[in-house]
Length: 153
Image 1 (cartoon, one colour):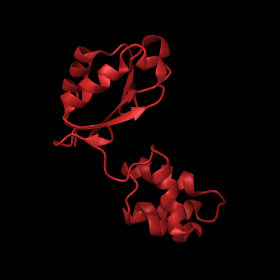
Image 2 (tube, helix red, strand yellow):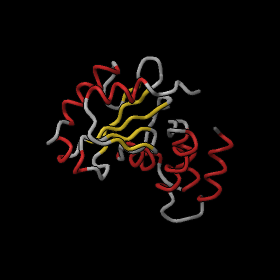
Image 3 (cartoon, rainbow, N blue to C red):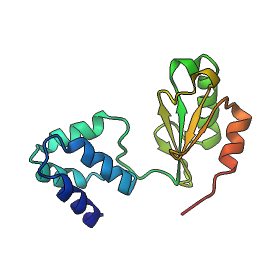
């Protein structure tokens, strides 16, 4: 982690407004922004630790713990809510045995909320691993999608 963090910080350290790009790059590289990175980020960017921590915790996009092997995001926006996203969310929590912003006990899936996937006409929608958007997802389809996930390492 330290070498990755140092590489990212050296690329951005002397730029104004580098905090968000740095946080994004760290999360892209590691899957999350570790707590021990905050003082290093603050020092490299000449910021107070509180400022770096405040930005990290303000934006729900940033994770502070490692995600599961797969990240499933269910749209919680109004258009999807109007066609069953709340019922889908309740089913997902029950099926996975974890709540939103939590990871299944086996580490396979992290469940997250997202507020619009651009599938408003065909909701409820979900996104798996930043690559696969699925529309018109009900409980049975959700179960099939979860069952199809590979327990990749």
